[in-house]
Length: 80
Image (cartoon, rainbow, N blue to C red):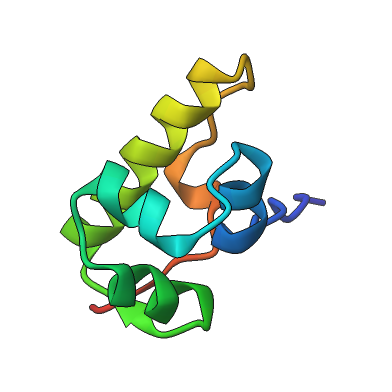
């Protein structure tokens, strides 16, 4: 039986690396703060925008000595 991969919320991952505000992650990802807000409340996002956030988050994780996450481990809802 296959096990389901646990999805991590962006909010939990953001706080884990010390981004206390959405603005901090938005700045690192070079997206608007409203974009982070929309993702955290479960709105759909373009895949290219999700990747910007993903790469910024993993850079911050590396800076804090945390292991990288895979893209599919984050709870992004993508626009198809």
